[in-house]
Length: 447
Image 1 (cartoon, rainbow, N blue to C red):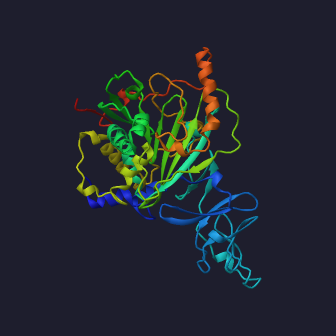
Image 2: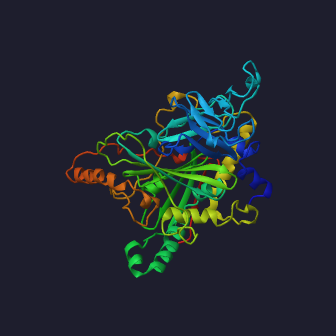
Image 3: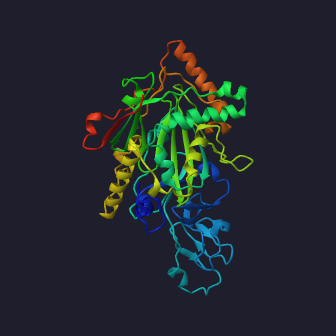
């Protein structure tokens, strides 16, 4: 359990809060590039209302939503070659927040030189638009492997979830929920849809025998051994990471890789981003643009959609309320990963207080070319992607999967013919020997 004060410390992300100060040391995605069909877009990040715009020179800017003149929303602003003009009285602001023009003021007035608006750095990278709300100098955007790999087809999807960011992230440190939420409960949901649906999509889940957590340079790696597996398999030997502070790496390790990025909109909302990289192991034509699609959260009756894995996760995040009452929780031994993550959060908060960079802040470009992360591979090495309409995960809503399928079919053909596939090097593993001193936990579960 946490005290109310500790819970507030970990969950509040607005300006001046401890977690807000920590989160402002990182770049956060605020839109997909494919969403910028309109040149001006209202965004909210870390409790701040902002406007993202592309000026007529093609440059991006991110400024306060409210014009400092009469507080009209700049969401309705007019892009100019060098900034965004307020629709009310024509005041013009550039990407640095400087006021360039005040048309109704005397021509020799210096008033505009004394007026500024809040402005933040913004960058396009890997099909996403990233914002940095922290102190200067801004660090580098981490070039994680999924963002920079060759021979990859990428797609981005997202939804707004009405809960605090920590509820989503702590779920990622909880391996055993898989057999219950995505197994036992999943089958209950399918049974209620009828025998045909249940027989077609039923989940054949296996019980966990052992779980483990290891801190490493990028965050925490979680491992598991389930019925029928041994510690020699990838799920225990390699595992997959929770990247500090708010990313989960998932996938089957044989062609499907994904990040789940939990962007803190404010204290009670996250913009949840799925960043998927399909790596079939055959030459892939360059993508002109990375497509984007929205994932629905609610059905026609206003209930959370619970017949796929990601919907079930979001149900578990939202059900405790906007901010979980951790003062009344009761953690067990199987919650060792959650406890470890909270300890890591506290350590990084203290680093910020001391004026230090927290972990996963990159400033050396040589160390930021391609950051490889561990990811276990499914046994058997089967090259598969979800079918549209499949009950497995949010990719069922993707309009782009059929364009990817021929690439995987070609990979299957090449493998059957004994031809080598591209990009299937062994994933990096986190050595247990390096995670002593309280940085490694193992839990043997009930048979």
